[in-house]
Every structure is written in C-alpha cells, then in structure tokens.
Amino acid sequence: MSRLLAVVVAASVLADAQAEESPFYAERVAGKKSPPRPVTRASATPQATPPEHAGKAATRFFVDMFSFGLLGKPRGDKKSHEVEITPRPISLENMNEVKVTYKFRNTTKSLMNLVFPTTQRLEITLTNASGKTLWQSSNDREFTNSQGFVLINPKEAVTFSERMPLADLLAGEIYDVRVEIVGYPETAITSTIIPQP
Image 1 (spheres, rainbow, N blue to C red):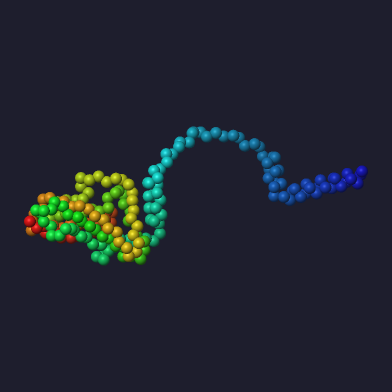
Image 2: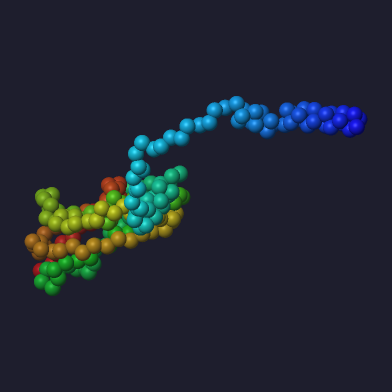
C-alpha cells in the first residue's frame, strides 16, 4: 500500500513539473492571479453610415486603382490629337450647326488615364478674327458632378464629339475653333473655318 502511495505522489510531482514547463502554465497562473476585467459600456451609440452608391463606389475604386503607378501623361505634340469639323464646306444658308470631332491618341508607351470631375469631356471655343469668344460649349449647360475616367492603351485612340452652332457667323469671315479635353490644356488644338454663303 505504501509503495502505491509513493507512486501516486511521484506521478503528481512529475505532472506539476511538466505543467510548469508548458507555455500554457504561465497563462493559467496569470489568469488565476489577475483580477476580473470590468465590463465597460460604450459612451455613445455608434451611428450607421449609409451605404455608398454602387456606381460611385465602382468608379472611385477604378480611378484610385489606375491613378496609382506609372501612367502616361497627355502630350501636346501634333501626332497625339486631331480635330475634324464636318460637313465641309460650311454653308450658312443650308446649315445651322456642324459636328466637331476630336480624336486623341496615346503616343506614350504606358497606359493613360484621363480623369474627369464631371460628365463634360470636351471644351470647344469659337472665336472671331479679333479673338472675341462667340460661343463656348460649356456655357448655358449643366454637367453632372460625377467623376469618370477614360483609359487609353498605348498607341490607341479615343474620340469625342460635340455639335457647334453657326449662329452669328458671317460668310467669308475667318473663325477659330479651339478644342481641348477638359482638365488637360496641353491637348488643345485649333482649327480654322471660313463659312460660305
């Protein structure tokens, strides 16, 4: 009986020694000694944030994603942009407006990202020989404050178009049509027109 008692005592001592070497032993001891944590309550009820519109969230995500890194920037060289005004010749008797088409090409070796704060893409300005502005595409128009972007791969092009009225133009006079991508003045290009009777 005494031999069995000795074996039980030895096993108990060995178990305590092994427990002290265990990494969990310190946690158990600390848990026993540390006082219980007080229960705290939030001082104010958290306010729920309304979900962002899916379209705006997607646009912002792609704009942020493609705005990061090495992207090509618009250049002012003649190879990168061109403007076409149709139909030609311009007849004031038979026409009251013309179509202005602007083509922009990415001449860089990198992906190009054009970011727009509103739905406006082009700014067209019509001036006479003395430099007076007769018409501007953004005047008397409302654009939605919705951020957008246009991605252009290297060597590829994007095309924008607008209608331009011919009111107050005189036959035989010289007029300049200045076209540029909104927010990128380096993309501006000017074309000359001479309306016919």
